[in-house]
Image (cartoon, rainbow, N blue to C red; front, side):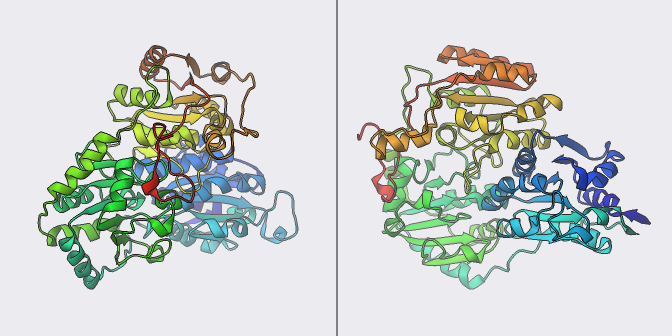
Length: 556
């Protein structure tokens, strides 16, 4: 049948099973929005307050559901407003398809009104991108984009479509894509055998779980592997929930704000098994001193990650779920009782602590954990609150902690929480922000109200840029340059002005009470939590130091 390019876009989204799109219309993409109007019952459109919110929402939808997130934007500034969200998804390997429309083909390259070479702009931050100048190529391009976004190591793909291509007609033939199989790298049995020998010889093994374990759906396999190897387990920020935070083998996060138990344990182990993690500098600290007593076995789907940041002794390239399936069938049950006890002693000696006499960030996180029974989807912005959310909420399932790990995007969490709630409407979704981060994209509260998306926004308000202030206190002799937010912004009034419910809490009892009310209301809620400006995240590893040199407030 003959369809316009705009109609083909919508039909191809339906082919892919897309049920929700986040976006913002404009002149160049009007034809697509007109085609979408006729399919409102099949594809929901969430009109965000800003295109960046749309890109973060698509990302949050993808992280929470495991499906591809989709966002729309018009040409020029509409397209460039997606860039931060696309880069966020790229750094954390999140499958997103961003569809932008541009000026007509004849106007490209002429500095036309609202023209930008968005394919050129996003080339370094996408798995692939396209500009489709021929309507006959459109359907196949969209299908390829979805396949690329979710295959192998996932990531964002951008499709830019000139406006006249959305108006032109061509023959469209529906395709069943449900039977398409994703290609994964063939696993080398030689690599498996080397790994097997390392695992068998180890007396003090440690397992480090990263975001790849979440993306591959390998939580069950990771758990079986850990208990069969009888080894303690730590994780990265992105790996949260792939291994249960209440399992006896779990020792906490690794790295700059990881637990002392994990940092000391990894520094003393004889074998570090790295599952779907890329050795971020925030994890390794001083790379030359990282796990220097250990042989390192890295399992990753992306061969480019092997030996990129840390030289490893052995590796297995492949989807971690498939690799662990093979290893679990081949390795014998291990017993490392003494080694496990050593790590358990570290956990007991160096617990995570905070000032319990006042309303503090960690208390807020623990109370959210208690009242949600550990079953919420937690989104965060970036900074101290993000670290507290990683440390003090116990994640027992994957895809329940959504945060910008690689890019560190302030303003990510609120949009992501909208996407997560749209994808998983039965779950309680809480976004945790600092007051500095909340200012970045707080206009998306209006989006939550407009579309009646009942997310809970918790603002941990210390009237400063907390993490930057922490660095200024510790390493810059308390020169608080441009980090004090001493203005009169009232987040409760702002929430009410945008149609949401606003609460303020200054004590522990007040927070308990208002969070319980927020859970009952089933509406968009903003809770402004007033904490001390000098609350800090502990433990910490100083920049350039080894993770074995982690220190806490008591050490100072």
